[in-house]
Length: 257
Length: 266
Ligand SMILES: Nc1ncnc2c1ncn2[C@@H]1O[C@H](COP(=O)(O)OP(=O)(O)O)[C@@H](O)[C@H]1O
Ligand SMILES: [Mg+2]
Image (cartoon, rainbow over all chains, first blue to last red; front, side, top):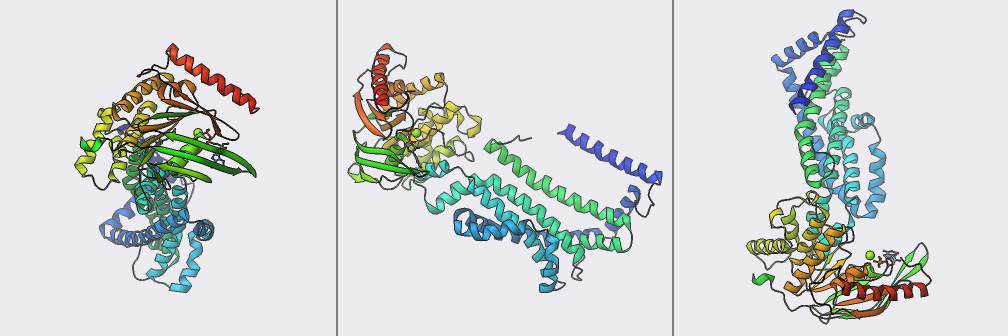
């Protein structure tokens, strides 16, 4: 573990050094490629005057709400698709199609329907995550070996009991990977929404990124990209990875490291 | 352990069972005119080459699938749905990977409403002890060897105290040594608990080693050809000469039926 962490740390220090080296060589104008020091200074500045924290809070509130609703809708709909062929052949098909649609494509519609409001953001995030959650749950439950259900039924399990005690736990690894995929889509959608939907009810990280481009402040653009990346990574490492490794250890699948 | 004491063991009667499948447009006569009476506490082995309808019959007995025709009764009552009166042990262990060993054995017990949590735990531990896995309560299924998994599956099937235990080639995927151990254990447990057992296998020696009676099936259409009484003393050793003599007799008959059916003997 310590070994892996130190390898990772060395790798990123190396990257920063190469970056600084490229900057010093002056191949590109400093306007296009700022030095890592300038990016660090910018991040330090917005951290001190609180802009970073308030923007992150706005963004996180949106993602929690949007992703949360995507999950709450996607779970039951995915379960419906998995059990009833009617839903698979209708809703499942829609989900399959819409999942491939990049979430920026929802922006025009969201603006027309909701205007420049929080609702537009919310809509884009839900549309971005819902479909992949439905598909992952549907696939997961369909992969539950029928022998589990047969064994449970001979032991007297029926209806709701079979659902809660057999289908759900058996599909759990798939459900979690569906949630993870849904998270990735939700995060991307929100960034697209914040960059394209300018609203006054709260400046998220995406907005700062957007203004960085308008101001030609490359250190701002790169700094915020770094923040977005770190948040995505943290959610993965602090939430999804531990859950996945517990599941792998129990189910005996994959290598739990 | 009052809860573990067998209620009156079952009598299973199978009459005139027929079952057909349609597979890619072809009709498959999986079972034809099956008659079989199984006594209380009896250990009956169904033996025959694969494809002769043994699993089909077992699934019908379990209530997991329906016969096209015929009558199936357990203590006089028709069997029309699966439930803890007939528990099944499958070839693949079918244990739940999200539960540990104890959790798996408790699964069926939790579906018996009249037991208290304490009683359930006692019963589960009793059966884990019976199959020799007391020390593995907390283990997860993938951590166990194939033989241990089947022991857990056996404990799980016995724990809710079914009136009949149905076993579908439960040891077929195990190595020979593990299997021999399980023959010994299964006979010991059966003698101790006096459970009615229907055991499906394609291995004639296994059938002779375990069964009071061996029911010989032949395929296409799947039907019962002959029923042999095996009165060798128990516990039986699968390697004994006497057992081999019985097994040879049955194997010879089986080959005769297969030749007659124009099939190639295994
Ligand atoms: N669900 C099914 N659909 C179609 N055919 C089946 C089905 N189950 C079994 N069969 C057919 O019925 C016959 C008997 O199968 P089975 O009972 O599994 O035999 P055994 O257990 O003796 O090997 C086989 O020919 C098999 O192909
Ligand atoms: Mg079979």
